[in-house]
Length: 411
Image (cartoon, rainbow, N blue to C red; front, side):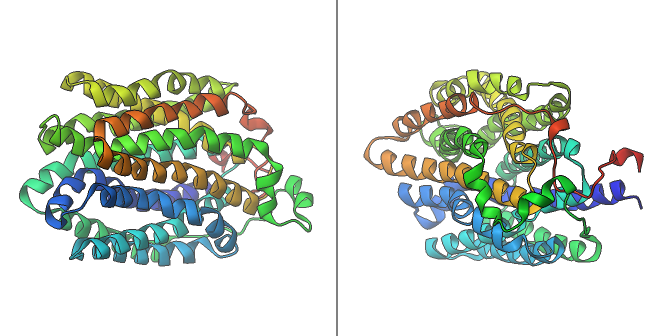
């Protein structure tokens, strides 16, 4: 098997693992109304559950990128799959809020460890020109996970319980761990010659302080994550209690978000290779995201809500691949790219964690509508920060992969 084909096989397994992780991560919004009925969960407790995924990513993204980047990705991903699957199963067996929250935190800790390995695998198997496409595929897998959650969960809840959904997902993760053990591969690759001199005597952590672009890209996503996680976590509860929508209706309405996120990811991956100024792709998110978040709160028409969630999906598809490609454009070493990516995944989860916490606390004193409305303008951070980002085409990037770097299609 050629290096190119092996690389796509390895990343295919990683994306499948991601899919199961996202199912468990995103299902909290759809399953939360049933969880609250079973366990009498208060607003602030629901906010903490919704924020837990982002809180752990915020706390551990940089440490895991530093510590685990020394290890073999195959080993880390295998143990991460087993631990992730185990904690997802434990969520299904939780008999109280404390056990549910503990299992939720354990699940995210294990998933964060796997996440630190992805930049290393991408650099081991692919050259710099492939990174935008890979990031777009990751974004599409995220959307596909939401499709499965929103498309299937409401109907599964009609015939079974929210616990069974976690049992199915956890079992799938354990099975994937065994598949990875048999077929997952590392690839030893010396650093690209252009980056070797930059590493001498330097800690990879130093890249965070040297590269202003990393802070701009992270800040651009933080407010969007705050507003988006607030709405996506609590809108199902709001729609059920205030709009009196059935859970199946809620799932069908929100389904347009990930469907168009998948469609948009396919478009963005190609567009990023064709458009010299990638920031052009951020114009649509700049103009639409704050209005979309406000619209889903105040609009009652189901067709219009479907349209708003679809626009949100397209905006997400255009935003994340562009911003997450920044670390690969700076000529960094493999470990520096891993740390830089971890840095960005620290600020994004921080916004995602603070959003549901904020809404949960404010809703207790006011209402869900007021709390979500206050959170929406934070999406303007995308405009404020990203307009100052450098815009470098992929051809000038020097990612730490084996050099020289031939096109993988030719192998």
